Each structure stands twice: as C-alpha cells, then as structure tokens.
Length: 568
Ligand code: ADP
Ligand code: MG
Image 1 (cartoon, protein in one colour):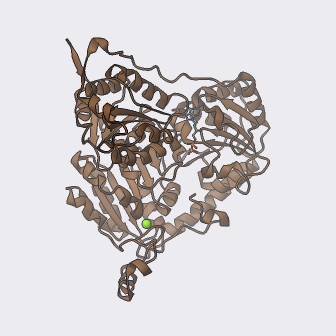
Image 2: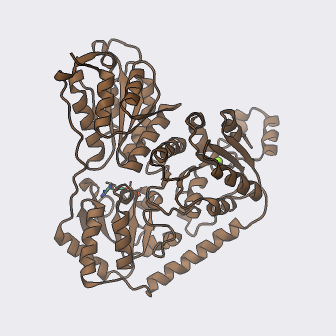
Image 3: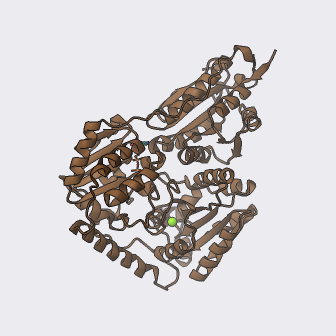
C-alpha cells in the first residue's frame, strides 16, 4: 500500500497548485507540515511572529501572482496571523493561510489552544474551511488557492485538525486535483468601450489614475503603449508607482493635488475611490468629474462616485481594447494644452520646494535631505519597501520607482509593521529569480519596532536587505535626548512623556549587529552616503542604517489645510 500523511498531502497539494513559498512559525501540530513542504520543493522561511509571516506570504502573492502560504499553529498563532490576512484582503492580495488546529475528536472540549478558527477567519478572508478527512485535502487546497487569485484576489484559510497531520491514508483513496487554471479574463462590453473613448476625447483636462490593481494585473506593457499613443497624463497611487516609471514625461505625480482637483475626466485603472483617493469627492476632486471606472470587481463599481462609464473586466484586456479603438483613428491628446502647462508649472514649483529643503545643511538632517541622498544612490531596479508616517509619505514623493511591483508599503489598510515581512518576501523572491535587484526597506523608527525581531530572520537566511531607519525618536515626532533626560528628572515618564515619544537615539543599528548583520549609526550626509554605498555593495548579509534626524522635522507646508493631517 502506498501511504501518504496529512502533512505530505498539504505540501504536495500546495506544490501542485504552484505555491512556491511558505512563511511561518512551527510548533505542535504543524512542524511536519513545514518539513513536508521543504521535501516537496517549497521554500520555507521561518519567521519570528506570525503577523510578519502572513505579511510576507501576501507580498509574495502580489509580487508573483501566486499566493504564498503562511503556516501557523493553533489558537494564538492563528490569531497573530489574522492581522496579515486582514491586510492582504484589504489590499486585494492573494495569500493562503494554513492553520494547525485541535484534533477532530476534541472540538469544544477545551483542547490545547482551541479556538473557533474557521469562523474567526471568515471576517478576514474570501474562503475559510476545514477538510473533514485526508482524502479531501487536495480539493480544499485547490479551492483555497483558486479562490485567492480568481475574481478580486484576497486571503483564504485552510484549517488542519492536529490529528490529521501525521495520520496516514492510502494514496488510491485520495481525490487528487490538478493545478487550477489561470484566472479567466473578461473584456469590457464593446459599446462601453466606444462610450469611454468618446468621453476621453471630449475631455479638456483628462487624467489617468494608475492603481495597484494595474500593477497586480501586469498591465504595464499595454499601458505604456496606451499612454504614449494617447498622450494622456497619468498619476500613480502609492503602489501604482512604477507601473510606468515615475520619470515618464506623462507622469504628473509632482502635481498630484492640482491634477486631482481640476481633472474633468478620470480614467480609473485598478484603484478604489477610497480614502487614498479622497473618495473621488470634493474638496479634492472637481464635483463634476466624469469617472471611467475599470475594475474586475463589479461590486466596486460606483463606490462613492457613480461612474460615467463602467468597464468591467481585466485591466490589461480593457486597456488593449481602448488602445485598439483609439489607434484606429490616430487620436492623441495634444501636448500644448493649458492643462499640461498648469500641471507642469505646479510640478516644477513643488520640486523646487523639496529641493530647497533637501539642500539645507543644518544638523540633525531633515527628511528631505535624507531622501534626496538616498534617491541618488539607489539603483533604479531596487524594490522599495516603505512604512511609517512622514517617512512613508515624504519618501513616496522623493524616491522614484521605475519598475512595476517594486514598491510595497502600508497600503489600503495603513498597516504599520508590514515592512520587514514584505522585505523578507521580496528578498526571497529575488533570490530565486536572481535578477540582481536590491531590496531596500525605508522605515520610520516606530514602524520598525513592530516587527524589529525579523532582522534575525534576515540574518539567518543571509537575505541582503538594506534597512534604513529614519529615526526621529517617536511616532510622528519625538524629543531630543536632553529634553528626555529633563523629563525623566521631573517625574514618572509614564505620566509626563508625550505618548508619541520613543527612546531618543535608540540604537536600532545594534539590533542588526547583534545577529551578525551590518549596522551603521548615521548623523551626517557623508555618513549616510558612505553607509548606504557600503551596504549596497554587500550581497552576503543585511544592513541597517540608523539615520538620526531632527525630531521636529516635518512635511513641507501643504497648499491645502486638509492635507496636513491626512496620511497622504
Ligand atoms: P490603490 O491602493 O492603488 O488605490 P486599490 O487596492 O484601492 O488600489 O484598488 C485596486 C483595484 O484593482 C481593486 O478594486 C481590484 O478589484 C482591482 N483589480 C485587481 N486586479 C485587477 C485586474 N487584473 N483587472 C482589473 N481590476 C483589478
Ligand atoms: Mg518616527
């Protein structure tokens, strides 16, 4: 008899469904699942917290189009992973979480780490199920992988009863399922395409918004043709950055507020009109803006703004349709319009303000100085991971992306703590694809703290991630060491220290050196440049640059008061 264990069935089924990476933390009852995964040829990365493991697995889903697996133990292990599932679902990224669970005959018995896991995961996933027998495992795994990538991508959960992991079954009794087909692609209705083109052609101030759906949908090639043939200006959302390069002549990111405010027609490609895009409503948008909405999720169409034209389907397919129709008559939006000059003028003014701040030579450095020098040294093909409040917001405007899916950040859910998990995922993918890309993780000091222990994971696997902690001693802002000492003398810090403060000049660089990576304490431009150059030349181990900046450094003055407190 040819027998197979539950662990082997899980691992082989994931491999059959072309899941190539697993991130997790082992313990009873899932150790054998991780071992079986490695035996099946899946790369297993052991992490230090399930949340980071789940962030990593979902980032693999975004980067490769195939979900990563996240392996966790029962109860608290699974509960930690819920944060990652929620983040993945909010971002529309595929991930498959495999959770060990109590034995089949112990449900509701008060078993070790017992928890209603299938029910708990329903809120955070598209599909949540527990196979009732070993025979059913391949079909449930296939359904989880398929559901994670079909329609709007998202998180799926498979619960594995502890007693099934080492139980054995005759292979002939198992219902094996082959690899699911790639997601079916649908085109938009032809009459809607014709209507969309008419609306675009009649526009005085047209704007394309490129979202992370366009990145996930791998629309870059056809989109480049469309933008260049049509001559239309485009604006990327945070993770839409790089679908077309930020230095493309049609990119109007540097005039973002004006572009959004004055556009009369918006072609919305894979971006939701949620808080990131100010709901598509005044005061950030023109109240009469006509929206041509492209999305594969029908339920998304019409959220906050009723679109003038709805194009339901896959972005690449729909942009191909638009391209074919506009190409026919060689229509092109002119480059000498008032719309172009107003945006160019605004972009130039914004660039000047940032540059003036960047060239200030006072110490400690401000955000703009730090990003100015980082941007000069980073290779164009590097993957930039970024999180933190000011660090992410200012970094986004100053660090260019040139390639699609090369920026990972706090995303739709605004999640802090994603950075190290994302960077580990990107570095693991880069290691297998071997394209020579660096992974650079630009973190606020607060953001770094959420998953800081993952530097041990980076050191253990020799993942040459470069972490830059832009350290302002706090959340939003902190205080300098002298003020901190004064406050400590005055009384119990728990009663007087501003809640936003963190330990001034904390030595995050020593966290990295503790595990054998390279650590740098940086105060000046020269130190920053040399530390970054050294780090980028080392492909053997990770580095951490602890860049101490002025704790009161802030964003430049915003033109509109409502911009000051938003996350954008
Ligand atoms: P952003 O954060 O960049 O604004 P969102 O995550 O809000 O982007 O929106 C992405 C949108 O893209 C989602 O509504 C999702 O349904 C959609 N989407 C994802 N993949 C595709 C695709 N291949 N074709 C069309 N729409 C897609
Ligand atoms: Mg900070």
